[in-house]
Amino acid sequence: WNQGDPIPEATLPELAKETPPAPSSGPTPEVPEGEARFAFAETGSPTSSGNNPQALAHGISVALYNTGFGLVIAIPSMIFYRHFRATVDGLVIEMELQAVKLVELVHGDRK
Image (cartoon, rainbow, N blue to C red):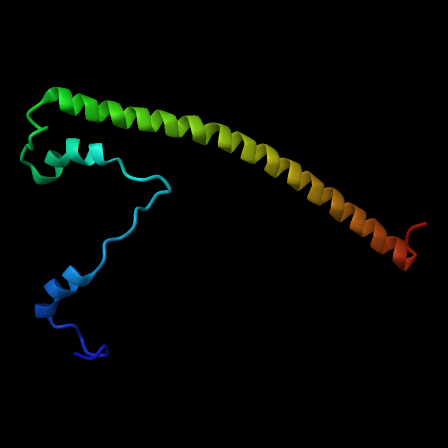
């Protein structure tokens, strides 16, 4: 099989086996408990934790805690980011005004 030729359909399962899994899309690692607790949702059949409402409630609890902790970090981070961005923008504008004054002074337009 050459790379210029179309891929034969018979080799697609073999290619799928050789393809490495994609990395996690977010900066935080996935929660293994969440995968175990909600595994029955993907397959349609309950697992050992699917028959236990307490295990399901624990999985939901863990997800809510993770969401809350993420918001506790994200909201102040955005506040500080916007504050420092506004400060830097103000400094950039002031530097641009001073640069214009310097150019006018050098060219003799300003006394």
